[in-house]
Length: 184
Image (cartoon, rainbow, N blue to C red; front, side, top):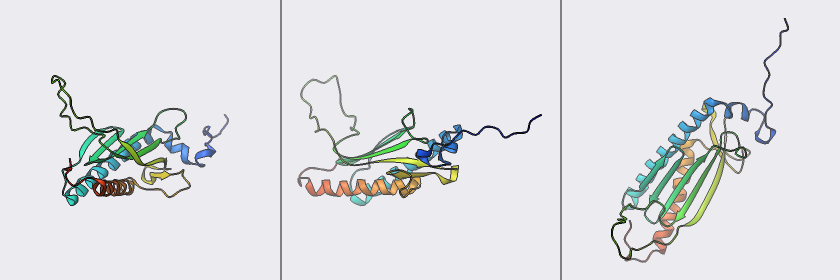
């Protein structure tokens, strides 16, 4: 009988020596879903607080397992956790975009009615960031802009960063908005 260790998959040097071992596991998929959920919950709570402080309507929310849309008046934050495909790094990527314009419509469209309806202008991206994941264990999950050599953020820290960008865009939109236009 020959004693030897079980084969170990070689690490992918593009993402660091130990980064791929945990991130390519099935366990990391459930951790990623929990981390995105934690991130999205933090974004929603912070956006609601920002709306209250600004004295405008509560944000419109559209949530799905890997996507989050927060419409705060004339601006919006969209976030997608991209985890599939061979070209995506282990653990996936998070794409966050701040928009000027309406992303999450209010849902008051009635298709049975004829006549002209006001179509809002298409949204324009004002800030975008793509982040990759680093994690050797469940507790070390971090989102990194510009690769894993940059500063990493926990999910709540990244939510604060994204909502700060949303607040900046909201303030700029209010400054540029004619005074007679109500916040929606």
